[in-house]
Length: 59
Length: 451
Image 1 (cartoon, each protein chain N blue to C red):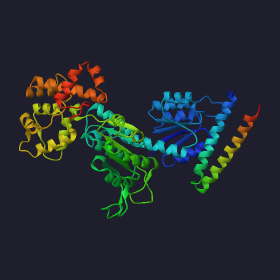
Image 2: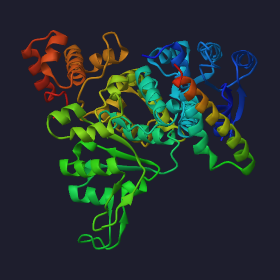
Image 3: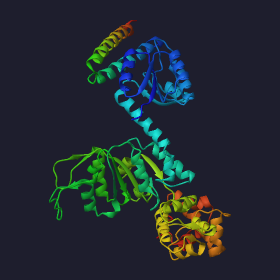
Image 4: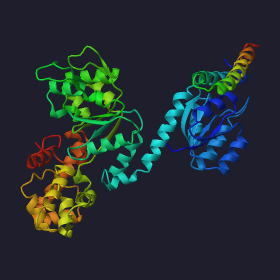
């Protein structure tokens, strides 16, 4: 059973993963400048995902 | 393409970037919190709003408040959120959202939403089709055709039901024109071909595939690539042919006759039939699986006798640009009360006949002279007290007028009950004897169609 905190973490996780997926699909069509900006945002999202996973694993 | 003015409410930076990229061809503004969104909504004129619901950690779906404000200003609200529980979806729609998508598939979803929005706006502004391409002032027919137009820009197959001459092909063309599909409108009347010829027409053939195939020929399925394939009188197709067509629809590929190389075609199906498809299935004349593939949205067109208000505008339309005619009140009333078994097509031919005649002013006698001897079929849908019915009674006598009314009501009930006589007996509270006597008198079969 998940509690309120877990629900919030899971929502954020789904949201970040979805954005990362959409960004990855879009990446190939970006200009070099956009790719650079996109990659930075994707890295930040990936870091957020790692952080959220860590929080989710905490008792 | 017209640029749309779009507002995006999204707190996540990467999601903002994704949405901005997807909306690059339009005039899009992106905000990250509720107060900024409400300010923009109050001060701007947006066509579409894309709304995330949870704005920041532990937020209580504050995006919903933006939906209510935007919907109140007539903005087409679309939710793109990771919060897609039934409760949240329900709340969003209740507040005025028009679409709800889970995040993660923006590449295809956003394009679909924009295409649908543009086509719907085009369809809404296409009210003039009812005074030009598809003449009708009958509210029921306008509503049905208007509803069908909403599905024009989708991939959904459309089935058009209605008697011969009611404008099924015209409507199919209009649906294609509003579909946004780049390909051609390709029409084929399935009843006009034998099974072998229909197969060659639909799938095409290689040179020498059969006797007489001197040249290779592209089939209609391939001609309809990226366009619309209109299958008229689909109910007349043999079961074997239905099976072959079903396979082609499912796989979007087929083999031309005599060819071992499959052809691919991305066609959208619109079909039409005079008969009740459920009845065709029950009688084993139509495969249920094919029906499932072709009946995504169904529209029924009423016979002209049940939309008498369309007779005058159609007469006017058919004489537009040519010799104009004038009709006396009695002539108009008679024409409106006439049954028009051939529907709009028959009215068109009748108008052509009058246009080439001697009299520019058409009176009751002229009309009666031209319509005399035609199979009158079913009586017009006139109500007691209608001028048309009164004119008919004056012309044919009261008994004949009453027979017309009873015949029409029984026929209509049978149609609406899918030919089930027991339901008609119950609905109209009539005896079996009266039902059969009326059908026999009018020369109608049990389904209410003329033999």
